Amino acid sequence: MSQPTLIYVYDALCGWCYGFSPVMKKLYEKYRGSVAFEVISGGMITGERVGEIGKVAPYISWAYTDVEKRTGVRFGEKFLNGVLKDGTAIFSSTKPALALSVFKKHLPERAVEFAHALQSAIYYDGIEPDKFESYLPYAELFGLDGAAFIAEMHLSDTEKAMLADFKLTQQLGVSGFPTTFFLQDQKLYAIARGYTDFENIDAAVQELLSEPVK
Image (tube, rainbow, N blue to C red):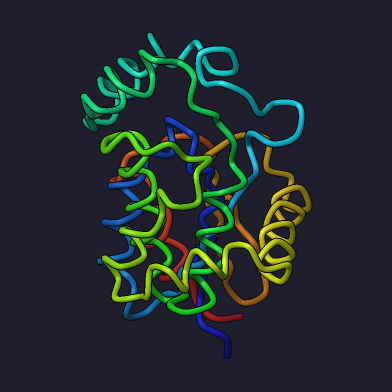
């Protein structure tokens, strides 16, 4: 019988996903021995939506406080007074999605940890998400060769893997991020749409795991 799987559909540029990231990491730490975890990049900002952060995401300048109040996360000074205040950094979901695709090729079992690191890199450390070199030190944090990691981000196979994530997001009917599913006994359950606190999503996981096998 296949192992139960928690499927986390997120986008590295999603502020509410950043707020949800500690919840997901806590779930991962609690259940990784009995539940498989899969992280899917949603492609929230692609195509015509890509542009300077000051133009494509001006709401962040005030909405981030709502995320902080609701979730307890903090946006870093380097992001708030650097990237956001300057307003010229290109906001695109593509590069962080490519980075996640490369990471999943090497360390798929730690994808939740890397997604958490990516969001902290963007919203706390203040990296520019559309620059390939921004991801080198974060790959190295997990023991991967940074230069080789960046080179793999340029490969066509990596782009195909990223686009497969985007397509799967659509097939799952995801209309907002984060969205969390639980796959068990070939049945897919949506256990959270949008930010959900740990207690509620943990209760949903426990309930599904306790169901008798049919």
